[in-house]
Length: 350
Image (cartoon, rainbow, N blue to C red; front, side):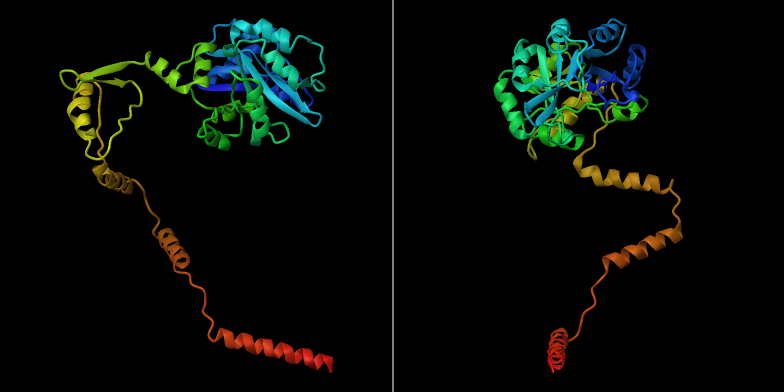
């Protein structure tokens, strides 16, 4: 499956940007394609280079690239936060004029005031721009807090905010009705292959900003729309009921005894087999049997060192059977010790 990376750097804009972040258009295309990235955005610090964007997007590439920028935003005097913006390809010129018009700006010193950020975002239709702030553990000094996230959403009602945390936090956020996504924040293009391994995958092909926006704003609507483009097979259950099986993961819910196995064996399995597909059925009651067969097959292929095996068993026995030594007459000994201490103190006083 194709991957998504909406946090890429290609130029040394600020002092903290190392030379290993610099990459030309040809090499960029090569890196993105060889790492199976299907959707990306270049988000240099406080800069959107429209010439670079056009040079890449005009090539015969097999990925989608959005205009993007990573801005330093001043929430108050002491709080500078990093917020990524990406927009629809058709808005590239406006995006440049609004967020990166001055090509001579000092990228280290540049700070966009929070109120100006809100005003500038509102120059775009809600379905033409996405807001992706660093969040919580992404970068503690430059990430927005929960309170700042709530403020951003309050001031941008109708716009879509996608949070960018660290990988370990992403699943937790997504489980709480928030949308989050991680990017590579590439620091060394020579090591991008390692960064790309941790990127999220796109379950369905996305061929436009509109479809990605649909995914980011309403996963239920997106799933319905993309399923319409998935290959499916219609299975007759009886003279009036039919079941659609998609060329994807299909989950059938039902309590014990509700007929899931019958549905699988009597309807789905025969129909898929007739179509020439190779089908396997694994029933829950057979899991132990299958597991035992896997173990048996591997036992014949693995040579076990008997000395090492005995050593491991002995060590495990020592840990599992470990017991603290019991002290006999503990209270009596403690009282005796206490009495001796008192005697010693009296002697010292004399």
